[in-house]
Image 1: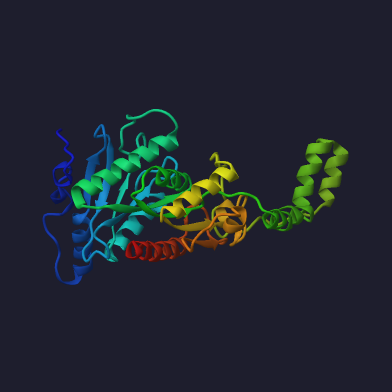
Image 2: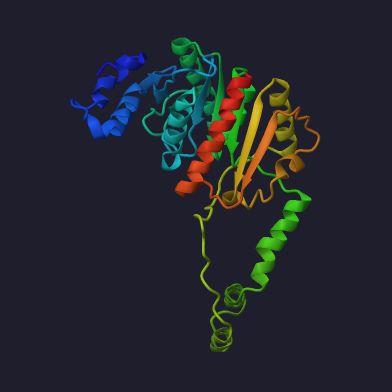
Length: 327
């Protein structure tokens, strides 16, 4: 099959539209079909190896600015629980076009292209995505949205490409502060000292499963099972730059006029646990009112709950529209 760089030729949009569209009471369904029909699947990149979905908009707040969604980890361009889809469509209704695509080796994008560190490869592919937007839609600057490793890739890519005018980074880097350590002791370690279950586990490790130990453990009451309101965080394998390098990177972004909005959730409480930590952990950076932070301790890392996802979509949309208007 011949696949070109032109969106309409790559995946004909008519294939997405049913031959008959209901009328009358099904008006809402018809609007949904029409909206999806305007979304364009594209193939681009130096090796025609990257696959994405372009979301156009009408009545653009800034027809020279668009959003690019950077995939987190090994997830494809729909994002966790279709977060990127919800964001792209909401932004489209608010006058901001966007592109969500798979980095090489993820989803439908082929594992070809430059070698080396994944963060450098992602940076190059984000620049290729900006090139496509510039060539086909006259976009001159972009706002990046990234979650987890997508946040790391976005911050790194903005260092390399001055066309990045804004970043919304969710659960980005975190460095300990004095207040962070105290919160960690107070909310993480002290409750465990009062937990019979924690003492049971410690006793088993230290004393072994002797009959005397078993008798002693039976005297300790069982603690109730934890009542999670969201999904607990799993093991994280990301590596952050040193604090000094992070300070230099953020200062460089601010100096070049890049606007920043950081979102931290309770899903990364092992690195971030209070609202002002971002500014406290990077002392000396002159922010020039270019950085804002939201802290949602009740939200998990990927906003699995519908109400959390809606809250996130509304807030990100608000900040992106502000960035697009300001740029």
